[in-house]
Length: 123
Length: 220
Length: 95
Image: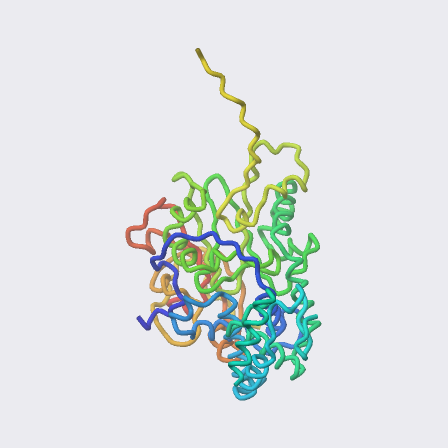
């Protein structure tokens, strides 16, 4: 039903609450940090609002919304917002995605709490 | 060509026990971050700083506020009038947080949700648990709170009303639980130790640790 | 400065029933229902507009409205004293 957006789920039937506790991966914490910085919460120049992030999350196809993890949704929506805001273009993103993938960088090459340098070496 | 090279690299690294291939989302995070750094929008240091700041936030901060409120009625009154100011009074920086503290009483039990996404007083309490952001919790706790709380092991008697708070706009919420009986003379630190994150969300209440059971005597 | 609130604590208000497009922070389940203003939260830029890269000004008064669960959900099982409290922007309240 298009009148009720998929994310607007209060009162809908659902199963039991699974009381999972999730130790966040470093990349997820980096997504969270980037959101804080970009929305100006930590005092840096504001580049977007959290409302734009929410709007983009709400625009995800329902099946994807359900399948994706929480920070999966955030990273997609954050990146969408940056394109919408003109911080970078779709083409720049496409080239960067290919560059990162070609580097063969792995999550396990990073020590806890730090991001790799631009050459892709684990720090 | 690239795919074959990547596949070989993946196999080699897997054999070395080091490799997890990137998900599309991890790839996106790295790409987003690098573009933002290249464009001068953020720095790696700023990202690391924001991560460290979030790690420093946690439910113990809310527990400290609760314990203070249990011991100091004036602080409690200030906290119920303006939760953010009360947090700052204890030295917690909470920029942008508009906190409403809701009080559990013998007549009413409070529980917090964000049905639309996962809004949570993160600047005070840190990141919310996974279940708080899940479809079952967000969908059901507004409609059948008693059943959901029972699934959490909390049975609210029918003599108590349940107040559900949907943090759907700009305010954020924390529950002030009732102080359990049997805590007379406890100091602030000891009291705070009773208050878990789940008590602050409203899916649990503070409980005294169980004392070891005495063995039952058998009557002959 | 934002616009002044037109409702007061204790007023009985009804949430508009509408299903527009764009980003909306009034949950679907509460639209069309009536409750009582529990507090005036202040005035905030309209999130519907912020989501569209506009400034959302003038700030809109935001209310916490208390609804009886029995009124909101058909066949609600629980105490008749059970309530749900939701933040409603002034422009979502029927005038």
